[in-house]
Length: 219
View 1 (cartoon, rainbow, N blue to C red):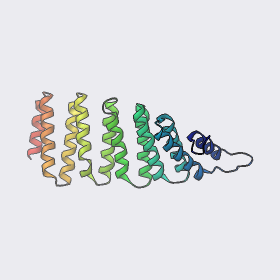
View 2 (view 1 turned 135 degrees about the vertical axis):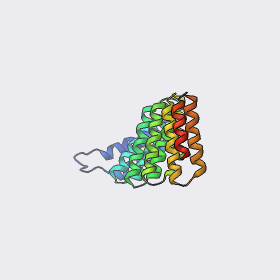
View 3 (view 1 turned 90 degrees about the vertical axis):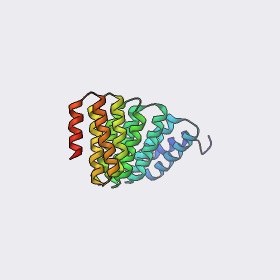
View 4 (view 1 turned 180 degrees about the vertical axis):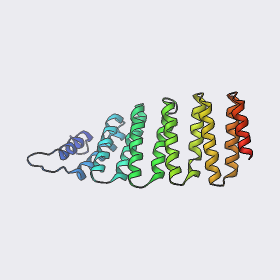
């Protein structure tokens, strides 16, 4: 087999991570480089399942090397391939893991972005999981004091809730957007959010909540 054969690279990398009488410690540095090289070769060859598995192994290797940023990047690559394969549970799990790894680096923005990518991928297939991912993504930004960057996440969550006919949840997301906009002095976005919540309540024939929302917003 040629040296660039990804199967051969995986076999060599696996061997480097296993202890034996002649190897008393795993060589994660070289193994991880081989996993990443193999993953990219598999991806180019459109062997997505094998590419995904190789990126998973590469991510673990980066963790073993105390490099959570690179581990997160490899995990995101695995998640993107899981999406192409239609493995929706893996899409959620892998992006969540990538988000956790970004948080280990103290990088809330890419951590939130990873969850948002998962949410967008799951909107049509597992919408309940998608809205939870959107909510978790916005929470990360809120806790980092970056509410303005969460505006689109609130809107996206509200849209999915409407598709699920969960109108009170949709309105609640828009009200959260209104509160976040208020903190940022984004008056235009705030007014649109509150108006959107009122419209959702009216569409759901919840006139009492629509009136309450209108009165609260008018104060």
